[in-house]
Image 1 (cartoon, rainbow, N blue to C red):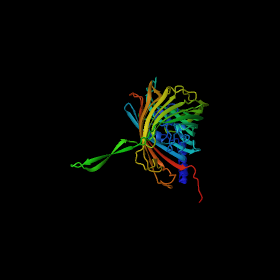
Image 2 (cartoon, rainbow, N blue to C red):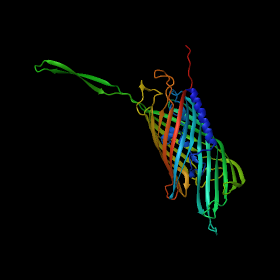
Image 3 (cartoon, one colour):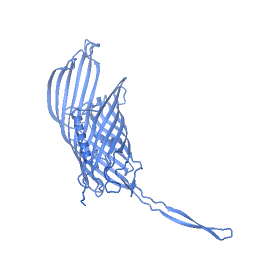
Image 4 (spheres, rainbow, N blue to C red):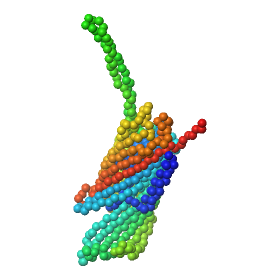
Length: 490
């Protein structure tokens, strides 16, 4: 299995590098032109996406917690995870736009994450993850009259942008006590964003592309580190046992002549007892800190002829400065009946009002952003059990659902842009066990294929602004393997 494991890892990394090199996106999104693009990191992996982006308070031996590094740890004296995990996720997206009576659509695909975790000790887990922090992809245009033009000409204004910022994260989680875990993620942020704006005079409505386009191109390269400390607290709030006790009563039935005929034994249950599975309460919190990201910005002017060829190009300026990304705070809580169900809720807050992108303020990015997320998952009770232990490796399906509501930091004509989404998802074990059986100490856990479907809308809820409806299909494959096997020679 481990050879297959390594092969899939190398293939996924190669595919990720190819996508980053070609700057793939998730389809046209005019709002991604504002700031540094559409934020992706707060959404987490496919488990979180299936639960409305909630899950910063979760910890599990089957899934990685990429929202809160403390969720990677094993709590002290409760070591139950010795598995190497590898997870790769992809996103396919379709969007439809509506502006007044105009409608349009777009689609795209991008990798969501490549993550790898290793248990270093019984309480310490470390891992690496490569994922997008933001994605920029926009292409739109509009026609308007030219002010104070005696010829009454109109002009076509076009905007084009692509790129994004990616993160290479080193994740670490350690269990401090049986109820407390701490974590720290150190990330290197890198990437480039290119934005182009052009204008073209329309002198003849029958030939709108007869004139040259005059435009400006701005490319910004980002590089710098960020830190994400995290904490996770767990407490068992409900577990009890009842003892079943019986009593037997004998009743004598007499014949008509008064002689004993027979005796009837009746069983009366005086108390019903059963073991109740524990309910765990968990609380998690994290903060993503950006002390300063280096930004190198190159601006140039160009002229493009009607045949789409650049006839002149000149670099206007090249500057280096620091872009101050805002801190993102995240808190979450969950209730879990291990192996049966869980419910989780998160709150995410980022203050963009003082966002400084290379010493330039964005007038449409001037407020705080907050997200409410709630979701859960359920595991139907159709698994094989023995001594109250679930055998890892059996085909246990998990189902998820969730909802998120976001007030974005984008402000259009005095109106806040809102984003709300519903999601459903599932995880299905695939393949067969290559070794071990239900009678051995180690039963290999099967790889999981996970799917999440998200439908949402971004809108200011005003008729004169662009409304964006999106449909996202997320796919993920998670592989597991034993970290070390102790070999015995007979």
